[in-house]
Length: 423
Image 1 (cartoon, one colour):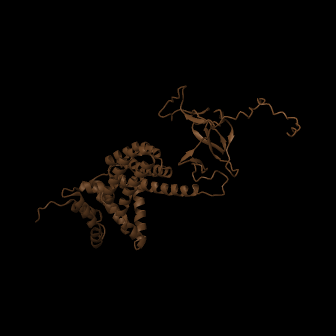
Image 2 (tube, helix red, strand yellow; image 1 turned 45 degrees about the horizontal axis):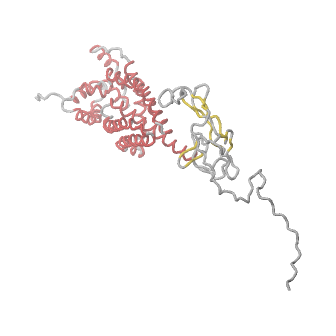
Image 3 (spheres, helix red, strand yellow; image 1 turned 135 degrees about the vertical axis):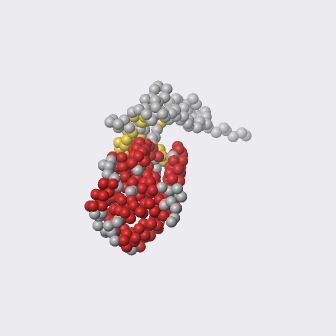
């Protein structure tokens, strides 16, 4: 007689066999043969000290696992007398669904939020859009707390999860011979690597556009390492879904946002020579073409007369009579922010100042970006008007404007008779 201590898989399978005892012995063995390799692989991953509780944490109780096997195999449910016997031996407690349900829907909510924020940041290439992730942090933390308190088995036994898993299983059985489904399954390892590369590339792209985005790069690199580690292990440990699902949602949202940004760049930055606005390929966020000086956009133009006096209400045209029309911005009364109010070719335009500005030009807030928007008139610089070159001094014969000439005209001389010839 062997005195070897039974392994966790043997104990778990024994309880599964007991829950399936009403089925024919041959069918029970066939069912157990199908699930035994998966359980053995999980036991190897857990190590030599694997316990039955760890398997229950990942797969649920042996009884619930046996019920799933019945459903997937098309077998009838357990008879009523077996349920009654189980009830007598161990009266079930009324399940508390709040904790597992919060863990589940907290995961779903955070995944959707990550996808939307990644989409917004990728479309505008603005890392500030990712600040909204701070709102999701408390929900995600509570979801993890409820997950570890209730256990992943309680989440897997939720009615909505059971129905979803049954629907997915039946769909897979119908598409079992589909080559496309098999090919997609073979790409699972590559997906986690692609997610990691996309996260790092997204961080580098934001850093190129905005230098302060370098602060986000370590978090994205850490997320990339986490998904490469957790992704392949999701099948054995369902708790790792709380890493793999949010990261996948972030990558998918960012991919759609990057695609939208590319389409927007192609459609709004195409230059048409016959346009009536200023012929420049640079456009603003509203699709209007902009004036450029070198490689920079020009938002305002100031004109001066020869004496250095600034001119107002100046209208600019090019050599073909086309107005140099650019977007005009103003302060929105309701929100106190900078917004588009039209497009014209009249200059100069008021300066839009965010925050309160005193007489010395100091503004409140950080870099003047806090406070309500207001318009400031005047020229924000001193213009040095070049003087025309000095011409050479006029000749004495030329007369100054408005003054009579100093030299009198020559008087005509009377004709004289020729001198008599000398003899």
